[in-house]
Length: 193
Length: 193
DNA sequence: CCACTTTTTGAGCGATCAGTCAAGAACAAT
DNA sequence: ATTGTTCTTGACTGATCGCTCAAAAAGTGG
Image (cartoon, rainbow over all chains, first blue to last red; front, side):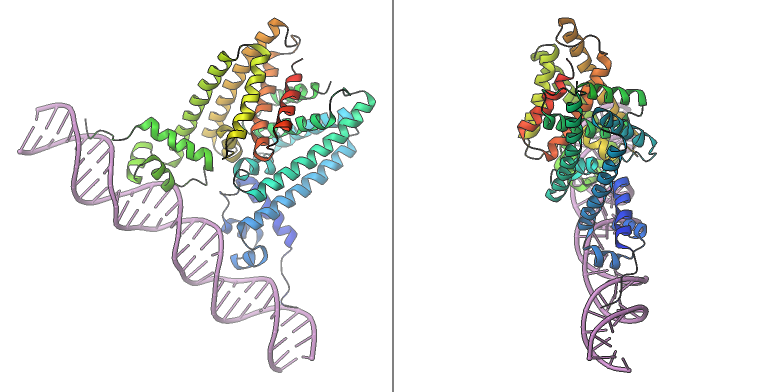
């Protein structure tokens, strides 16, 4: 019923996500979003409601992509402490390779919006929890093998790692020296001993 | 010579800084800045040039205030590991007490602007370096007393601490549970053993 | 074919954006 | 008092903001 939509909705959200990621929420205009998504303002508002709703969908899209990618990487990189270390090094090299220096959309959104936007805060917290769970299983694995000290709470160590990871996404914005970044990663991982 | 300025320039910058801190750069309008500073647009532009220049002055103002406050606190709280721990706990309680959840202006600015604004990036990096230096001296003190493992580079540990601190300023934006935050601080400090 | 529904199109809405400017006011130097 | 310089005032600029809407187009059900 009705005229069928001519564009791929998921693809459009993804393009909006990339733009929000590059520029941030406030600095991205609906006009720019429209041309990036290939949509007239009318179509955009008809399909997504308003700028804020579109942003929330973009956040969700980002979370889905990042989480599945992180799961894949953890599965490919083995278990325990090694997987955690490879993950951190991967993030460092990923951020250094990105000429736009976009960092992490969740971290950026937390900094820009979380204090006065409850929806964004909830999404960032959910993403954070997801990440902590991923670390948690790796930590438990490491503790079983003896790579990681068992006397420390895996939950607390996971929170500690997420905190360091979020810090790293900020640090990379101003510090592009790979040696320094890897030293931070190394110091972070030594906290697991 | 000429008509004397009727307002306190430093005070005006400070009020601009508070507004930028609360709202971020893009979300703060020059009109809002003017009324917060008690200035007509003409006076504002005559004294500060444009919005971006005013923001850079506000960043500098923030750095001066925070750095001197941090130095005072470190001096008051003693030396070495204890001073570092008290500093982190202070930051946690400070951020939790702030109903606006502003976090750290340097971290917020890094997330919002550092990727495409070289002036901001330089200011954030300078602030980061200042903070690292503060940690560095405390670490060296701790190493001399034996509180902190001497076999680890004090410089790298300082970078690690700044990274964790920046992460904490993001984490507090979405995680208000003091227990969780203090556990992160505790895990961070155990990395110094 | 004819309703009926939904999407696309692109002009256009009022509001607000960062920034300007002419006029008047307050000082110093002469 | 006059001149020169700077600051204050507040109306004003063109551009852009997020968003709307009427008309046309493209589908489905009868």
